[in-house]
Length: 81
Image 1 (cartoon, rainbow, N blue to C red):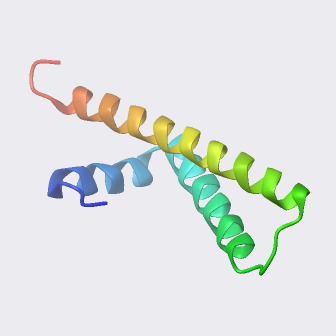
Image 2 (cartoon, rainbow, N blue to C red; image 1 turned 90 degrees about the vertical axis):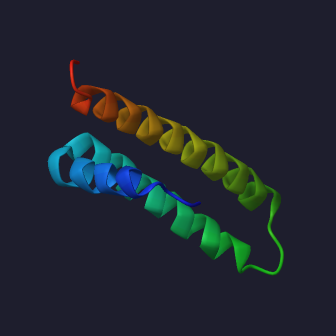
């Protein structure tokens, strides 16, 4: 994903100032790592496939929440807001 230069800076500022944003990023990273671990298995059991689907859904939800926070933060920084 290519980020605007300003967007990357906003993400860094949120990481530095928002515990909630750091929590979301950490959970997103943990889900990514678990998905990576599952992807290296030659065959997934039915339970593992279910786990993979749930991890992808959770990861997407976190990504949406992080994006919403980023947009809200951007709006707060706009002049006149």
